Length: 344
Image (cartoon, rainbow, N blue to C red; front, side, top):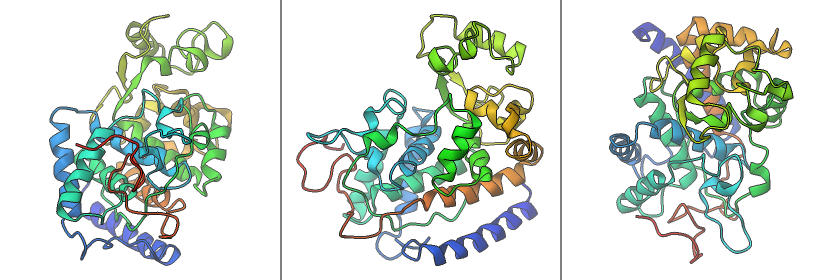
């Protein structure tokens, strides 16, 4: 648990950071819906709590939706759009297909908000709010969620092919983050979201992600993988087994948002190649490895950095120009478009 004094210190850091970001993106503000939809946060929170009763994975899934949305043409809700003639959805790209989940819960949140304040809260902002609530409800830090984004009118299937991948090496990950003006601290902190949630066997025992049986074409396991953990995963994910079997990203506290993701990496128990690269690759020494060490030794440091990095990510090209964006009535389709699935 974080002490009261530590929480106050973290809050002070976040206030300062938020004030700086207000200056950089004046259109976004924490109180954007205070007058137009004052109960927005509580409405989102209640829908998420209800959803979690039947789906313990939902909190981790929702923060991942926000991440995958922001990394493709900015935080504009583009990931939520269904495929229509002439536009293929980001949902159908390999990084998202049969992997990104939680869309019906987003639909439920949108329906509840439309009932309370029609046409006010954007789908892009729903993802930002839901991500913060999901972390808090899982034991993690809170932060000032800056709001006021509009929803985009296009889905970028091609752009979603370049999302950070589980088989990416550190150099590739660093470039994908730096291309969006995110630092090594952001990379390590945001990767800490893998402290909760589940992942399929195909991400550790198939093709380019095969750490158990044929790492980098060697017909051998990944040498950085702890042997006892490898044996455990081999039982869960046998060679040529069912690739859709789910595993805990953090085997120690799989549903709690804490620093154990980093303590796992410290002992070579990172599930994904991209996880362990942050600590074990040659390029990590002097760059990301010391950050992993810091977060593994101090949950307060991780929480403060994670909160700031979520603010940073939420400010990737926010769409605020009403000539280019809108507040969708249905997160799955552009307003006026009859294609797409009706919500609820």
